[in-house]
Length: 194
Picture 1 (cartoon, rainbow, N blue to C red):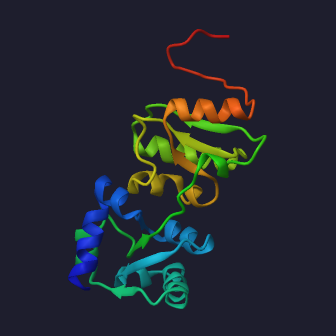
Picture 2 (cartoon, helix red, strand yellow; picture 1 turned 30 degrees about the vertical axis):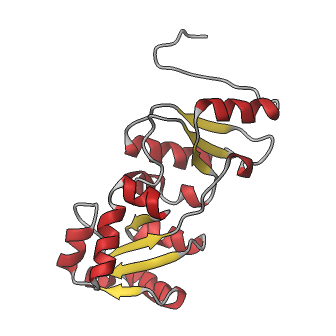
């Protein structure tokens, strides 16, 4: 593996690096399968021998080889050093996820707005649930875990790639909703029962 790819992966482990480059890390068999299925642009893919331990991993490696010339073989130990998970599955991809905008959210659909949901796993689970329930999109307000955080991406299991998911500030979201005459509902843990 080249030093530049190692540097890139380390930079993308930090929010500032992801924001500056417009790139993210997709780790694990399931998430990288979703990257391929939704045709997300791949910048680099690190593949370790551990990926070939299962037929599913072998199939993924073959699909990646057909999809991109950016396949980089690495040692298992090297991937463990770069991975965000404790037990990596042998694949780590540098992707260029779509930059969604509020106007990408389909008209007339329910959207999920996350306000100060700080746990990345919870944010990812909410994204996955929003997709499963047919939401038109997800908007993360300030104070919410970053949507391209590797933990959010893993927990969402590819939902980012199938529905608009973006960060926005409250006033911009309210202006957008008002211009479309969308009803706004809110729920809070310390609110009153209705």
